[in-house]
Length: 116
Length: 111
Image: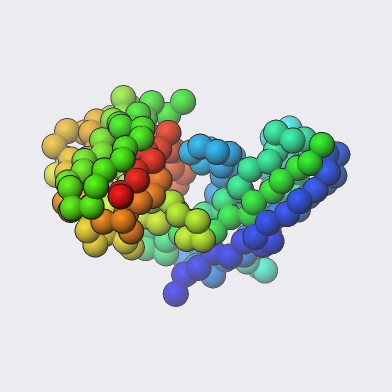
């Protein structure tokens, strides 16, 4: 059965710390992995990763994919209180684009709290 | 802004009453989704649509039905609401092959 597992489930840090969030997956016919940020509202898209070893960056956030070891990490450097959120990871289902299937498999998320 | 609106944004209803939630997009994307999000369960797919009148079930479809008579609107109906359907409901669209973009959500409370 396809699955996506995120760790840790929750994390509390101080402003200025660097954090690493993990997303491991077991999905047949893996194609890509997506990261989202969810504050107290809807999830917002951060990154999509399709190739191993290529880092995606957006400001203080960066992410990398390891297709051999089946995981991705999301790094946040110099954390700020505004980074407090749940970070979600998702992988397209292994029948993605077969017929009309465009479903994502979601992890449960990592809840990050950044204290001043 | 992915051009998605949801209505209502908040609703309180009683057990046994029918409820319809509306998702509206302005960009004519083919794929639309309904999710519910609950503590400890994450995002769970209820139903999705891949075109007008074309829908399919997700992992938690029991007790829910959907309709899509126009490209821009995707309706989620709880035929007879139960307390277990108290949740936050998100609509999403998929304008490119993989990423999904979410509406603002509807908080539904069933008493």
